[in-house]
Length: 383
Image (cartoon, rainbow, N blue to C red; front, side, top):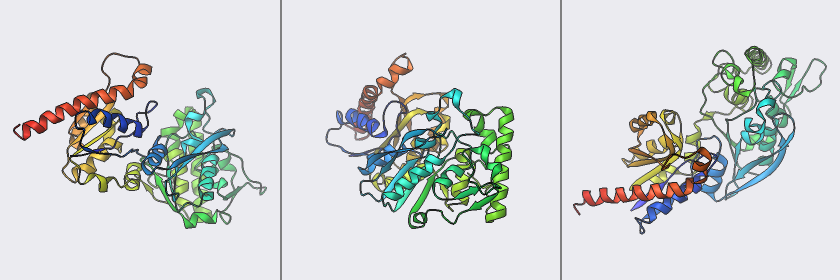
C-alpha cells in the first residue's frame, strides 16, 4: 500500500514537512508496512520556500536586505539540494509582517529588498529562480525591486528617485540598460494567485492598500501614482502594464515582473507541484492525504488541498483532508476532489494551545483516520 502525504504548512504552528511527519506517525501505527511518501507542499505564499527546501533536501540562506520601510532586515532565500534552483518569498524582504501596524505606510514602503534577494540568488549561480508573491507591505509597482536589479528611474534633475509609491510621480526618465544581465540566463517563475490589474477600482491600491495602512484619501493618491507610472512605462518602453491580469499583485510587483522582466505569472500551487514532481509521485498511490491550517470555502481558490486533490483525481485516487480547523463552508471542497475532511482540534481550547498541540493532535487524528480506513479496506475485502 502506497500512501502519499502532501500537506501545506499549518501557519504559525508547523511547517509542511512537520505536518507530513505527524500524519505519517499516526498512519504508520495502523499500516506499519505501507510505503509512505511525504511531499511538503505550498501555494506560493508564506511557507513556500521552506516547503520547497524540505522537498528537495535543500537549505535556507539568510541575507541582510533593505526592508519595506527602508531599515535593514534579515531576509532569506532557499536553494534546492542540487544547487540549481533558488526559492524566494517576496514577503521575506518586503512583507507586511515586518512592519508594526502603526508604522505601515503604503506610500513609503519599498520592494528594494526583494530585488536584493534576487541578486543574492543570482550570485549563487542558480539556473532557475522561483519567486512567490503575497503578503506585501508595498505599493510601489515593483520599482524598488527593479532599482536593486539595475533599472534607473530618474527625476527631472536626472537624480535617482527615492523609495516607495510616493516617488513614482517624480519619475521622468526610465533607463533599463543596466538591468542585471544574468537575468537573461536564468528561468524566472513567479507564483501568483491574484488576478487584479494594476490600477482602477479592482487594482492594487483600492483592493489591497487599506491593509497596508492606506486611508480612503491615500488610496486615491496611490492609484493616481500607479497610473502615472503605467502611462510613463507605456510611453517610454512601449509596455502596457495597467490592466494586465495579475499586474496588481503585491502592490504592483506583478506588473514589474510582467512588463520589465517579461515574466509570466503562474499559479503558486502549479509551480510548487511541478517543482516537487507531485503528479509523478501520486499517480501510483493507493491513498492521498493533504491538508492545511484551515479548510473552508476559500480552499477551492488555488489553495494546496484542492490543488493536490485535483491532481489525485486525474488518477481516480481517494483524497482525505486534515485541517487545524473547519467551518461549514468546508463542504465546498467535496465538489473539488476531496472525499472527506477532518479537524485535529479535539476540544474547546484557545488558539495558542491549539497551535502548540498541533503535532500531537495531527498524529492522534491521523491514527483515528487510519483505523477507519483499515475498517473500510477490511469491509471492502469481505474480511
